[in-house]
Image (tube, rainbow, N blue to C red; front, top):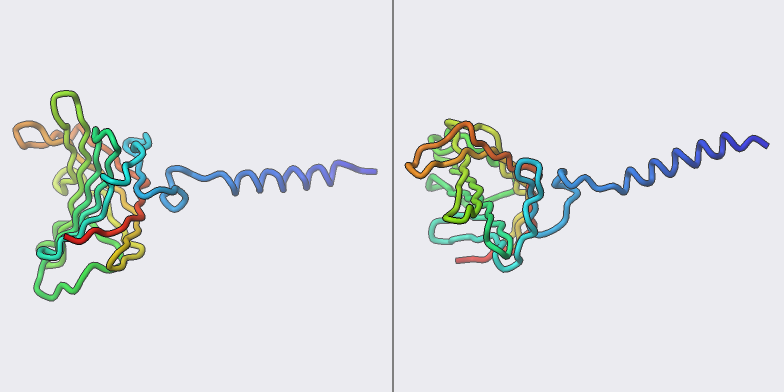
Amino acid sequence: MNLIKPLTILTFVLIALFTSCNKDKNNPETVSGPFVATIDGQSFPATSTTLTKAKYVSSTKMLQIIGQPADQKEAIILSLFPFGSDFSGWNTGTYNFNPANVTNLKYLLSAEYNRWEGQGYQQWFMKWEHVQTGELVIESISDTKIKGRFHFDAVKMLSNGTFDPTSVKKVTAGAFDLDIVNY
């Protein structure tokens, strides 16, 4: 009896089974939680359910997504501001950081990463003049819930308000599934 063929088939089945069950923590489609991301390849700390939120400010129609761990030593903040009088609400779709969206009276997307450094927060911002990578994708949105993903590069802001283009944080594999709080 030739056992090589059944063992070979069994080996391939086991390999396929284990690799298909292995979740890639850098792929936002396979990570779970209300808010996840990586900063320069390192996992963003587990977020607090009370500090992580999506806010909608009805007076300005601003949509803000905030991820923050319980110790409040880090934060990722994404903000969408509409422009133009024909704005009817945020929809599913891809939003990018290109300032042409402001010029064309569409929207402004901003993002930042903040980290506590003992004496204060160091801040990195998505600044088009220095870094041009990033987007926010709204996969689903209702009056009470928003789900999506994001990534962006952010450049460090110095204490004098200028930016250090040699200090860039890569925020990747971002995903969120949050209730929307109305203000």
